[in-house]
Length: 161
Length: 266
Ligand SMILES: Cc1cc2nc3c(=O)[nH]c(=O)nc-3n(C[C@H](O)[C@H](O)[C@H](O)COP(=O)(O)OP(=O)(O)OC[C@H]3O[C@@H](n4cnc5c(N)ncnc54)[C@H](O)[C@@H]3O)c2cc1C
Ligand code: FES
Ligand code: FES
Image: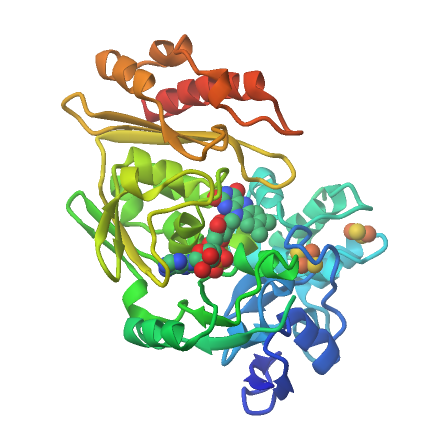
């Protein structure tokens, strides 16, 4: 067993600790030890992006790294986006634009979308689609996801208004 | 995944010592190849030695035309580096098309070339740029480093510390990505180093990993134009054949990607 400690969703490194088998994946640590089940496992093979979280402000696939690789890092999961009970603007935009159907891909989609606008606030439609290349959705056909990102980009104003 | 132990190396020395102590140790950088492989139980190291936090392996230096990239530098860092983009934008563009953003935030140039996947992008850049691979033991020319599919000149326990190259006069990389995996079905890197020194390296297509296409190099040295490579002979017998494309398809892709790369380099 090894001790892993990371700062998760604003809780300090000291506050989030657990003894884990060294082969524990970051996503297992998040879901099974911290009981934060918003982060999903879709493919478990680094393809679908459902497990995307932010580590030190960078989107990463939590199914393809060990919890111990995140030792000491700052981790934000989908649960960490809402502030004081109010949805993050990206979550609100997904809600308003119907950017989800079954919702399985949504936590990862939202985490990648937040990263994409942080990196490139003026992203064009093409750039939005390219930046979401690592996130697969089996339901929506992506159009409303792209619209949600554009709506968030425009400050919450509907993209086609 | 089989059970394993994890160690975070604090320095190059520490990494070597940890490796020596381990029964069947393996270095891990971004883990974007190694972790999926371990999950499939195709690799089962007793110990993982994490190089991602070793300071000596990080960072990008550009002085004049000389570019040095630390082994633990991520694809995202190469893609967005404003110093490299001024002297060799082709390698930034290549890095920006590896996998997807999350893969680029973790994956490193050292891990990519150590792995030498026959469909990886960086090996083509290293060959065409005439790069030198620095390790904790020696310096190896790219031409001698890549030795066929998943094979390199690295010895057991040897650590890549950096890659170094001299920025060419002009260069470009053109890739035909597999639509599902985003790895190269064929990628061609062309570089004009001046004075008739032209290099063309092909990844994704060859049945023995990355290779230089000498006939195209000769043709481009005489006439730098897409037409010069349009009718180059690509031996189908040397091509990969799989469910994504057969030999003839890939041989044609080599010509098409080479034409596009030359046109993009201008
Ligand atoms: C979904 C997905 C899509 C991808 N698409 C592409 C693509 O389009 N093009 C592409 O080129 N690649 C692609 N990759 C691979 C990606 O670029 C990997 O990051 C890269 O191949 C390996 O780098 P790493 O740092 O993750 O290495 P790791 O996985 O950590 O290590 C790989 C191997 O290299 C060894 N190693 C690592 N660092 C060193 C070092 N400094 N010295 C000596 N040995 C070392 C390890 O022991 C291991 O054997 C993709 C990966 C995924 C998951
Ligand atoms: S579950 Fe991690 S990428 Fe699909
Ligand atoms: S909403 Fe169902 S997978 Fe995206």
